[in-house]
Length: 167
Image (cartoon, rainbow, N blue to C red; front, side, top):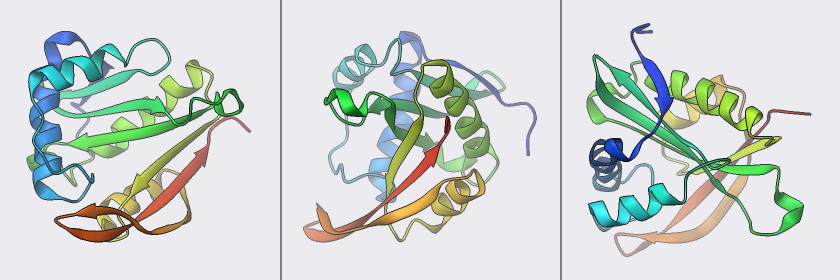
């Protein structure tokens, strides 16, 4: 694993890089049901919702952002205050190079600091690279929602995974 990766909280100045990486994920159709490219206005609104508990972090290599992760609300119900939904996106040319491991470690530390006890994520059953990373970092498969959403006009299944971080 490259030890030159550095993590930090995302800032407003990172939005263009975050946007570019997110749009790669949309184009590649392996990480999101979103189909339309997003713009800077969309990412600015997203960023404004990611402060305090629902943090966003970035990973840099040689002062370039190569990945990001965010903690997102799982539910508005108070019973789920300890559960965060995870988003994680890695620049195409850095996938499979250890960035995801660093991101997951850092976002987990952030989640613990922000008093979450559990992280959940949603992934496609065919995203084997992502699932391998999540399993390696202690996530377990909870189940698969059949025909959960549409991608390119076809229904697709979505797998949910979880990790208890504070028992």
